[in-house]
Image (cartoon, rainbow, N blue to C red; front, side, top):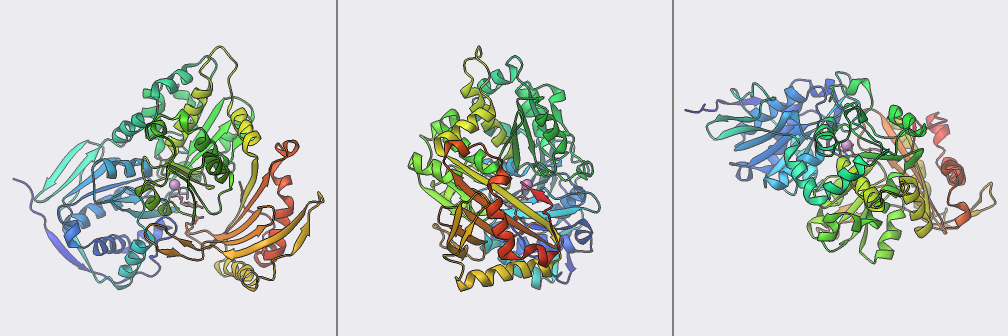
Length: 566
Ligand code: VG1
Ligand code: CO
């Protein structure tokens, strides 16, 4: 006989500020630990879904293993049971990378998923925690849905929760049952690995890995992808164990900042700069971001998606699909991908920041490959960006260019250089000013928004130290109308565009948990062969100076330098 559910109604009061940002609700752990804070948000998700949809439904749940993951999972199980959910699929040890979770939702035709992660934000007791709802296509809930969740959090008064639902051991695969409700612990990697085998030619990648003298290194940054790397890179593809670093998921990411960029992945960057390996890769806490490095060479994420798109025919998945359906990038991402779309003569889309904006295009077969400058790359094999997939893409492209193993290795650097020679190069950089006082952050944005609103900037000319003249062609506040559901998203970034196509963009981050993070993005196209290999910061210095002058950022915030330069 199975256990009857013992369901209780718990009275609650709204918490302020439970508004999901770019990618779910992210706050300090101490916030989430406050009384019914998490309960309120979870019940609000279920209130939006409604009892009809929930009855007997399947939900996928998992997280990146950060502090509070295990407690949060048990709370979610108990609330789900009381709200009529029929089955929960949870990753072993509570772990599922964001892309793997998306894959499981699609493979199992689940109603949706709850992801527990604050992605690249630090974890641990004093770090961040986060929660995000994904819908039945496996992708992040659209804005209309997250707005409804927020509305519910403002009026919530009762939580439905089962008193006797607890899964004693999340490390053991298998099902625990109650009457009308079950929790199945699934292998965190298996279904994702099944999918990856339909996307790539694993045999070819395996041969590259085995190539004499070829060295590949992967840094999981103590996030969830350690589990995936051990299974996929080591067990399936034969990468040596000591080439996988920080591959044991840790509650506080070993005190690190699990953000795969030049600042926060110093161990790998140092080794790559020393020329120790041919390929070095890293991914973030929840496994949806990726960084790719060649020997002494950094692949800018905006270039990365462009090169993958230009080399689609190296990847079996796109060959099977008959080529590219379309390409897309987030607005602040460099325009390198646009050039690939033009040459390939496929539809191209520019969407606001955040992966949720790609979903509709993929669901309507208009989009194959997309990316964001923030180390996010993906395709329509799932509905999230996918770190391991991006790395496998690069390995496949390398394998494709190195079929003749008797010749010298065609390196990542040479593949990118050839890409620039063919398409021209978008010099690109992003400056992040983190944890700025919220008021000051708003002031910077207001000042630039006001200037933009007057349009007085149009026609203004600046001359750089190199004598090159920059003339402002247009200024606006980016607004996006979804071509599929026609929903409108406003205030998605302030843009200054120049006559030569160069761009400066100002945006406030929507993923931080404290203060404001101001992001400045710079993009400049260069076609002259003699200028294809300049230093990025030097090449962009005029644009950078224009941005700082127009925004008054340094004076208002008192910050002379950004925290992170990408
Ligand atoms: C950042 C990135 C954005 C990305 C988002 C979620 O958002 O800029 O491109 O989609 O993080 O990524 P924001 O609002 O802070 O600029 V993740 O890996 O944190 O889920
Ligand atoms: Co992430």
